Length: 72
Image: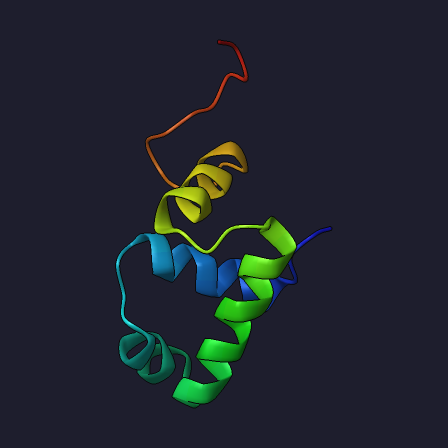
């Protein structure tokens, strides 16, 4: 399942350690909307942990300076 553009935007801020309050202010949306997006992101990616979210973001090239080769 793919993330929407807004979910990707919020995920990028989550992995940069922005709080829900900071994300809401930055994107000019309510905290409740941010929390709803966080919930949907977690369900789509089947994770609730920051590590799981960060792993996905790295794999998708969403974090500058990190590349994922897919090799073990």
